[in-house]
Length: 271
Image 1 (cartoon, helix red, strand yellow):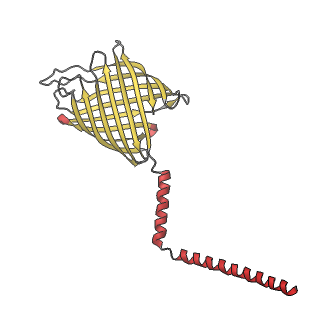
Image 2 (cartoon, one colour):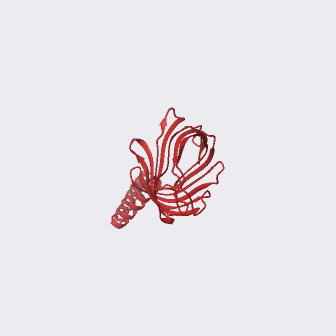
Image 3 (spheres, helix red, strand yellow):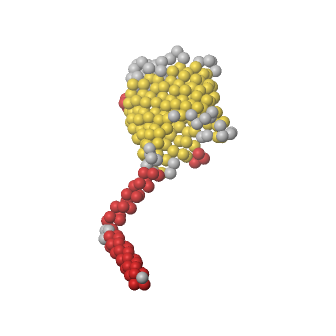
């Protein structure tokens, strides 16, 4: 009996020793395998990790669309309906913008433009943009359509002014500059006033139905909106407008500049 117990003890000790040797062998094998991994493989693994991190935190594709409809009228009761669309898709660094504007005043035909712009981030809060613009004015007797090349910048100027500045060079030796600036002033989280300024300076235009060169049009006003939610924002608008008259050419007579106060209301939709 004692011999049997002794044999069992010896067998148990042998089994434990064999398990320990097996574990040591596996550990040595793993260490050798890790030592055999080349620096190139480690670098590739790190690059893949960086790419995955970049995909998760820097290269997401976003979209945003703003659609505005408003009705404005002057002190004589003459009204104008206008719509504008600004939509973009892209990452923090690269975006594609589509912008469209159309308006129609009482007793006049419509006019509008459509632009496609590539936008590239060049500095904190600033993007450089380039693209093309198609414009049409049914009120002109000649040269109703034209295509322009566009370059410009878009960003946040000091004191939180959203700024768009563009240079247009197009058909009929057309050269113009446009500036737009806005700033949000919060009364509450939902009631927001937005002063704005826009101006277009025409340096040259040799079309048959050209406007006079210089300050072609300007508008300064304040739009006050109520954000019912993030997607629906009705507003009221008060503005002063200036429009320069037509240039005297062989196809048209010179007209006087016009200016005055406008007021109205509209709705801003975000998608």
